[in-house]
Image 1 (tube, rainbow, N blue to C red):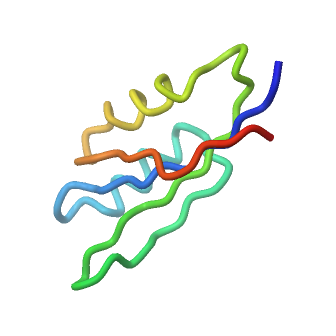
Image 2: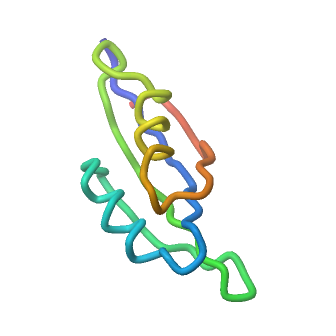
Length: 81
């Protein structure tokens, strides 16, 4: 069993950035931050850590995609701890 760290870049639906932040917090991330992309567009960077024997990155990604305020989800970085 080993720990895994994964960072997602999440794009909220237009006008739903705060709702997306609130919904993402319900998934218990280790860290969550807004990132300015440009031209007033913001993405949300979300850090999760998990034990790969109990969970997978696709389960977390599916959880993010299922949120009503989320438009797109990208895996930005994944590594062993």
